[in-house]
Image 1 (cartoon, rainbow, N blue to C red):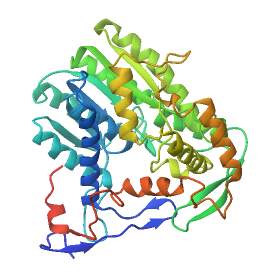
Image 2: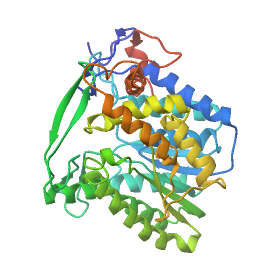
Image 3: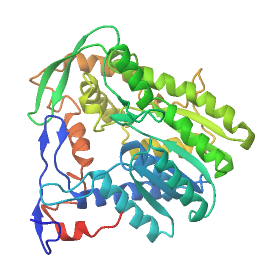
Length: 407
């Protein structure tokens, strides 16, 4: 089948290889966008940004931040993300590709700008394109920059021949823990070897705050930052049960580096009354979280406990609360390091005590029963790619229609 085929319906179904999704339901992605918009609109309008730039705005936290900026605050938005378009019936593209398109369509219906840039956010060329667009077409300087990037690699801007690759590894010691194979519906034991010094440094370059600093520097130098500009980067700490793999692993070290970057950025934007923020996010189901040992098991216990306490949040719920209450509202919760802590609900002592007790009861025989939050965890994972989305039950899509979508 060629890319120019017309009137072609393609059957779709969820396909998993281990914990990696190999299929997408574009119409489910569209419905998920509509569901998230409806959630934000149901909470009502709140004062916030007017012109927002989201680096990594095509999925998860970044997409949720964009939706609450547009449909909660009434902001025009720009997203920079690297996603794949559809090619044929076997390669329908990535969920983020459709998220960007369907978000833009809904934003334009609401009279808002929803500009999408598809490409590598780390490159100077992308930064130049975005700055040029802001100057010529965006209608004013930006007052919010959200940096929400989870990337596998980054080219050294000072040496194009060097490529830094991020890794999810422990530091100093090998650690063994249980993980979930969503394809087979099984628990399995996984050992992660410690990262080398080179891998640690590379992960800091990719997942730390270097590129965040460069974006702010370039935007300010170009004169496209508004007075009172705010910028925010997302971090994660989590419970002690996940420290080896996250908070004290390579990703945790990269997030520590990002906090150092936030201080440098703050000094750079003091003269425009700016604010550089780090927000510690809650545990959510993402494409990355399902490959971190122990973390999915923790989510299974957490989601079950939160089901009983009424505190469970999806990315849109979490980020809407963050911006509505903390970034622009008067209910900031901060820790001793000045970080915003919307994860306080998750980290409540009573909740963590219940989660720890439940984790101790989980076995290969019962992990996917009503004892845990497995059903919710799996459903949220499938929804990332448009499956099991309330209001979308398509079993086939029109390839010709998809090929005509404009980013």
